[in-house]
Image (cartoon, rainbow over all chains, first blue to last red; front, side, top):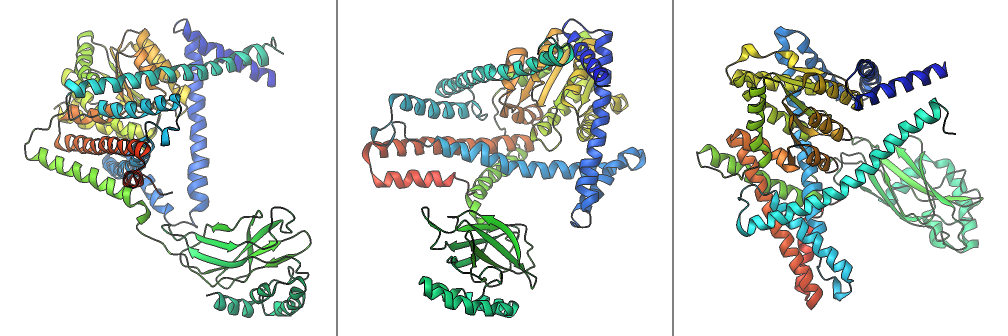
Amino acid sequence: MDHLGLWIAGFLTLGIYSFLYRDNPWYKLSESIFIGVSAGYWVVTEFWQNFVGKFWDQKGDDPWLWIGAVLGLMMLMRLFPKIGWISRWPLAFVVGATSGFWMMNYLTTNCMAQVQATIIPLLGLGYEASAVMIFSNIVLVVGTFCGVAYFFFSKAHTGVFGATARVGVWTIMVTFGAMFALTIMNRMSLLIGRTSFIFGEWLGLIR
Amino acid sequence: MIASGCTAGAERFGSYLKLATLATFLIPIVGFSAFAQENSVVSADSVAVATVAPVTSLVVEDYRYDDGENLALTWVPSIDDQPVGGKVVGYEIFQITDSGEPEKIADVLPGVSSFLATGLHAGASYRFYVTARAETSSAPSVISAALTPHREWINWGLWNLMLTALVVGGSVMFFIETARRGHELFVRKIAGLEAVDEAIGRATEMGRPILYIPGIQDMDDVQTLASLTILGRVAEHAATYDIRIRMPVSRSLVMTAARETIKAAYQAAGRPDAYNEDMVNYVTDEQFGYVAAVDGIMVRERPATVFLLGAFFAESLILAETGNSVGAIQIAGTARPAQLPFFIAACDFTLIGEELFAASAYLSGEPKSLGSLKGQDVGKGVAMVAIVLGVVAATLYALTGAAWLQAFGDWLVAMFTIAS
């Protein structure tokens, strides 16, 4: 039975990779199985982890959970066209609550913490900083300032401000270049993982 | 407070008094007379041989700015708690809820002098004592006075966050009102957004559908919200020019919201009859299952235009490369820095970070959206000024050592420091 599972997994992995050549029936079959199995898996997971785990098992302990249950029921009203409008209310609740929650989160992490971390002496306290550190500090401060200038939408990118914004976008692009390389390395590990499965676990060519 | 705690403890644990008497005999032997007074209420099993000194000055305080769920304990460690040659091997923390029995809630290491009791209830009262534990004996502290945790409605520790929110929020409201009164608000051009109309026009000319991917996160992600706002604009154009929109999604809630958005856009364009629920369909929550489906749609339906706007993860490059391979004009945007390099490399136009959030204001030109964008710019302006002032002050202080520069720099840093 284990061998059968391995062969199915290997067959479907190669089926998905066959997309690299072109769209074909093997890929379509693998795609359909992947989507169907994963959708079914998520239905079961959502039911047991969210409905049973987070509501049904704890409904007696926390009365607030009933509000979520009612909102969930309202969402299901979409299934009945005549009263489908009811589903807009829980949706509005989710969107509104999410916006409020994330506003504080973004102000904290994307604004205040960044400003605080950027307020540093360029030369280091008492000239104690090394040349590398001074260069690093200048890059950090100038890059951050110019980066913020790029995302300032109330002024056209012309003149001195435009030059500042250009420095900002260059800084951003250099950062993206470094991140591109880092992420590619992570993606290579995914490829190595599947290759290792095919040639190791499945075909037994790697021991 | 400590006295009342001792009295209550004595009533509750009257049987321990005999052992306390034994303790008064033992303590002078080891020379800890102060300890003897504080240790008048102790547990039966721990003071049989009191060869270790207990902790003193146990203080229990309400933990500020919480939901009434925590109490903070501090104490002075046992004098036998020494880094070298100390007898104490740890402390046990006991909790007495209302008039219940003592319950051990935690073990902490030697040297520790504070603990946060969590999972409490705002209406109940709690007493605590800390037992210093040695290899063969242990000694409890006095029992603290009963204390009820309180719930605070406003966290004044985050006053600077509130101030920032008020400045930004107030600016947003001011600019919304300004826009409503008919004043024109300037917003600079955003290259990626300028291309939206061009991309829709291309789909019209080619008679092929628009593929719209709102990312793989749910409605609790602000990038998905921004994406759906842009979707409204795209859908309105699509309705006007009678272009088919194809929108596979990976979250059921996003499917519902997207259908509402497109429906409203078709109504606004005067084409409610052209709206079809099947424009938006749920695929699967599984990340790469969704990617497999979208890739299949791309190569089979060959859309003229692909929008990749929202929260993306490892699938970003796979989707962008497939869209590129079918010759679609691609407009992407996300606030996830790790994925932006892939979009920049593989797509025709990319909305970088906040440009995604600015998109709705720019496209719609509505007072609410424009006011929101301008209000955020006020926040950015304040941040830029603070950075310049702070860096100048810190650098001049490093050069001159002037105290007032240090004070000013510290004040600026404090303004932007979030209390933990």
